[in-house]
Amino acid sequence: MNGESVSTFQFLGLTFNTTNIISGLLAATIVFVVVFVLSRKIQLKPTGKQNVLEWMIDFTNNIVRGSVTNGDAPKFGLYAFTLFLFIFVSNQLGMFLQIGWNGVTYVRSPTSDPVITLTLSLMTIMFAHFSGVEKLGFKRYFKNTYLTPFVFWLPISIFTELIDFLTLGLRIYGVIFSGEMLLKIIGGMAFSGGPLMTIATVPISLIWQGFSVFLGSIQAYVFVTLTSVYISQQVQIEE
Image 1: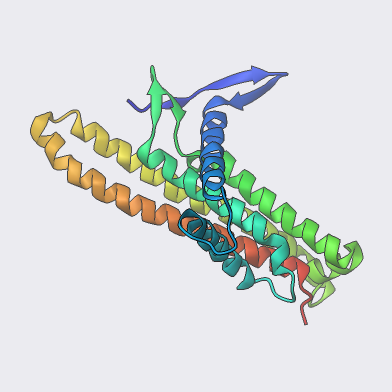
Image 2: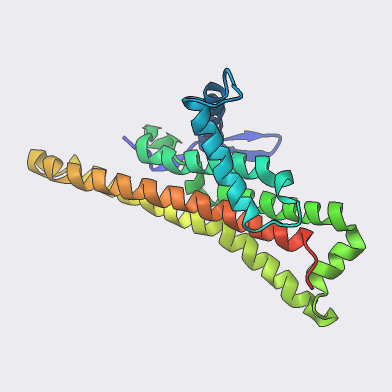
């Protein structure tokens, strides 16, 4: 049965979420294994599983190229590829595997926790700013980001940064969390209403799982697309 709370532990006075650690490591392991298996015996003329890997790489590269121009796109291809796969797997994990014991959940979708999604959001925003400073230099980057088109734009730019950070992280969290909650409700109905209710909820559960897989895929795509947009805003000079 699915737990109703998460597991935590204390270390050096800090509280760590065991559920997020286990779920995040599981998602990362799945991504590693998939890429490792698909990348074995690379050939000049791709066939079979190598075609799948190259299709995924081309897919994320095209997302980056759609926003980042002037020859900068190749620098961010690996980041976009890794980010997309991790978020995609994380979004789907809780739809097919939720493990709990004695009312505590140990495995679920990592992205159903706002701490994880906002961390990914912060990581993306910081990476975009780092890339801007690296390319333009701090003075030029600061003027391009916060003082364009005029000096008094600074407060609006800072407020926009905060909104971007929150919306990027909370959007994906809301979709995945609500999907898991509804799946739990359907599962509770299946085991509390007798055999007829169990039979009736099976197709509902399958339909919702399929729809949730679709939503999780879209959210991974949207996250990487917005990441590319944020990066492009920092590394490209506004005319």
